[in-house]
Structure formats: structure tokens, C-alpha cells
Length: 356
Image 1 (cartoon, rainbow, N blue to C red):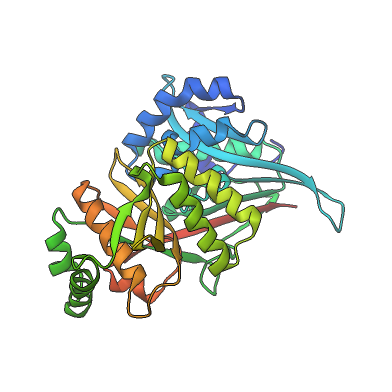
Image 2 (image 1 turned 90 degrees about the vertical axis):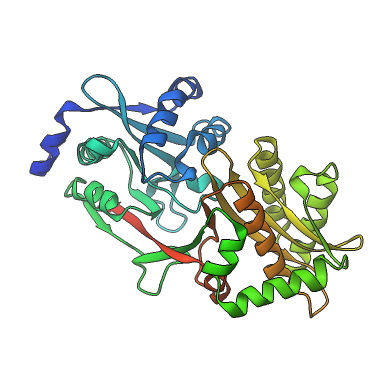
């Protein structure tokens, strides 16, 4: 490797790391990958094969997966990476970026899968593999487990500068960000009574009584409706109009939603007044393990007295609880309304390394 390894990297001697970069090898990894994902208590849905494997399969030559195996050949660690090589437009210098592969497809969380009982040795073996891999920049954003990012960083070679640099959406210091989420109880009534303030609870109940139970408005999950293509296009038209979304952004989100629906990972609550769509949510749903992630809120020309966001999120939370989901994730950002809905913070770190 050309330099003395930190002493703790000796822990990795019993582990080997394979570099997987083709679709056939990836398919052969799926079962073990899913087993490791289920065993890792720190794993997020965005590290699961359900989420990532189809994305990687569709983007050949753009990724590499570092797979760590223990002494008996069992998969013990996984680091999926997005690989990009290009020349800097000003300096002309060649740049090879390795970024968490989840960033290929709007993942809010990234990270490293590890077998819980050997996490440190797994991270050390992955650090050694990274030291032997060509790259100029390593970017692992929004990692929920700070101890893993620090352990990995401690094993990178002396030719690297490592830090927690500012990433989009992070706090002013650029060290950490917060991803608010709601821990869901077993019953919606418990959510209203124990999670919300009396004021917000009263607002939700009054809004549903006035607008939904009265029949003035109705909410339907478009992902389950036969009219889904029309409702998706209507929602994207609203997004383009109200948020000035570019045609390229709209095209990407259309493809994203169509793919999610095909894989049964989409929930799209839509709020209507008569035949007019006045609001929609685009949520990712992990139905097997019980997590829901709200990705995009679209609001149309609603009457000023209608609390569109409140109605849609409260309805989605009610459906999530009915579906036995454990968490309702509200995505990056610390807007006050998220905490009014009962959110708590999940702190995430972004590891940035540069070779010199």
C-alpha cells in the first residue's frame, strides 16, 4: 500500500473484500445482502437490496460495491458506491469520485452495512480496500451512525484529508444535519393524544371534520387507483407550475414515481376538491419492514382556509399506522411544521475525503 497502516487495521486480517461491478455478480449477492441488511440494526431502507439493487442494475459501469467477507466466507459488510470519472472543467485535472450509491436515486440516508458483532473489523477491511482503490474524492453523505464513519475515516491512508464538510441541506457548520421523523404508535388515536400538542390535535380534527368528513374534499392514494397515470401527470404539472420545476426535473420524478409504483414502494395521497387536484404527497413505503419516507409535497391552488399539507400528512400518517409502519420520515430540513406533527431528530453525518 506504500504506507504504514494504523495499528487497529490488523483487526481486518481475517476479512477479505471483493469488488463487485457487474450485474451478474450483483444478482448473486442479493440473498446474502438482504440477510445482512436484516441483521444490521443500524441499516436504513436506502441500504437494502430492495431499494438499491434495481437502481444499480439499470446503471452499469457507474458503480462498485465493496463486499467484506469473514473468515468462513459469510458476507459481513457492504459499501455500495457510485463511481464517476471526469476532468475538472477549469483545471483539466482528472477526478474520480466515489459517492454513496444511494445518491443515484434520491436516498435520504446512506451508510455502510455491517454484521453487528464484527463492525469494527469490517470497517477496517473496507478502509483497506478503499486505500487500494483509485479515487480522488470520497463522499459518504447523510450517514446516521457517526461511529462507523469515524472508524472508516481512521483507516484511510495518510494521503487523504478527511473531514465532515458542508453538504446540501446541512447546518451552518457543515458538520451534521437532522432528518426529522415520527415514531409511530400502534393506534392513530394514540398518535393524536400522546404525540401532538393539544393545539395541533385540535387543528387536525377540525380540518378533517370541516373539509373531509363534510364531503367538500376527499383524499385518495393515487398509487392504488386506476387513474394513477392521469393523477401523476396532473401533480407533476402543478409542481412545474408552482415550484418552477424544470422539464428535466419533472421527467426524472415521473420515471422515479413510475418505477416506485411498479415495485410497490409508492404511496401518493392526493387531495381533491371535486375534480380538481389541490395537493399531493409522493412517499416511499417500505412495506416489509415498516417505514415510510415523505419525499415531495405538491400544492396547487387551494382555498386559503384549506390546510393542504396538514390534511395530507395527517391522512398519510393515519394510513401508515393502519399499515403497522414504525416510522414516518419527513426528510431533510428542520421546518417547524415537522416538529408540530411530532417529529424527533435523527442526526446524520457526511464523511468527505480527498486525496492529495
